[in-house]
Length: 358
Image 1: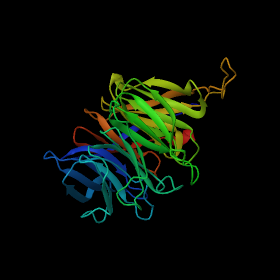
Image 2: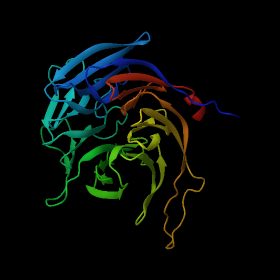
Image 3: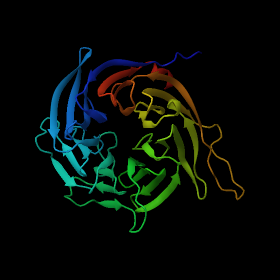
Image 4: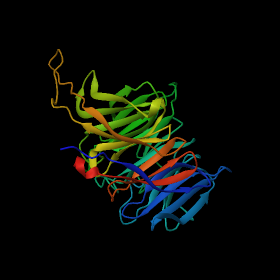
């Protein structure tokens, strides 16, 4: 049987009066949030709704400091509160119906928060609701909004070490109420995975270029795959099922987006083997991971070192003239997505014929 190729279609777009740094689809709704910075340096938070083939602005707020990133991952589905990180180092949680004041806020870092992720809520209900923040100060901090001002965990460079910006952070391995890891990517190409139950470094590697984005294929299962996107036109998919004591996790590396930065990598919520990357050339690439037929192989000492799978690029589409810096899938409607580029526009897209890969 010949498979019909999936198409990446820009459904509708809307010009913005600010630079967008992140977009997040509001769970169980036709709405999405755009976060960014006005030209005057203030923060922009806008909520849009799909309405009869158009995008309608339904709520907006302007704050003193620009927003860099956001997540719904630590929020209960009934409340759908958005956690944000800003240029002043504050982490705040917002009720999108009442944005005059945050429901929770803390001075999380002394410098800009570059990245944020949540667990224990939407999409990953196991364990306590926690938010991870990564900053220019090189630290990763874990916050529980039920506890005021003090992080429940802190991973930071020791005094005297060279400090590298933390550019990406992601939760994973939350398959029960006790296990959880957090993975961080840094400007120098370091990728470090920390076990939050034992508070220890589980694994580390260096991908040679700054880590712009990373994501587990699913947060709420035992570690399966990790995608790592880099500053220099490539991404890596790590098979996390087998950890070799010397070689680490088996992985495959893929060039992408015509030798430009791979800004974001996001797995399809309805199929963890399908993922999309956004590029510095204004394109989106749709990809499929295939597991190897041979699960593992032995090294000279008889130790299991795992085998990496293969990646197929299903399709690509040029969607903007500037880098596509932010992308998010709708968690409810397969193929529906939202993305923002540095041309000060937000776009809603549709990826067709994804059912054939179930």
